[in-house]
Image (cartoon, rainbow, N blue to C red):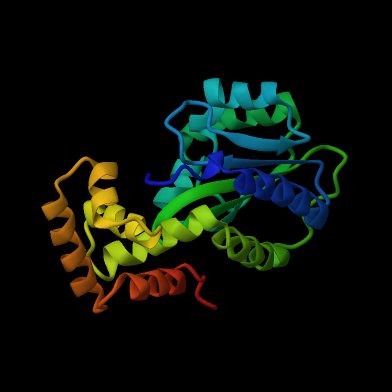
Length: 234
């Protein structure tokens, strides 16, 4: 992944705000927001009401049995899935052990995307004593609101823009790196030094980038990139 979204302050603030928003909207005591930009076993996360020891136990023992396992949802290209409607198989029988052990009565999962890249997920958990989910109607509306706010994060905007540049305009990864530095105002010489490549190579990349995008200057590239970073209205 080109951008580690979870490391930005605004991303951490968004995660906490989203957890509290979801708990309030769905009248739940617990929620966990997880970032998917790490190769560590325990993914970076923000939780309220769901203790760290339960999350550690989840990754160590129970993750593969979870019907709402994020990697399973990614394969389904899901956005919103309830525990009741999640696809199950024979491996999920042990998930009831986790539910009993930690008092997980019900759950809804939300998966956040930038283009075709899954970047984060939110688990909203009902525990004994919480009122049950009454209807799934609010879930999709909540997701649309949260996903739109998610796409406004600067780091996510960059991933969204890179997705469009790669898939619609066929920029290579190296051309994306050069284009990003051009947009940041670096000269060809500065770009060459930053990327450790020859100045002539940078000039060739610049010509190809402008040609693929159908523009003539760095100023046009900055404007073009800014327009790509604006989330499309539904």
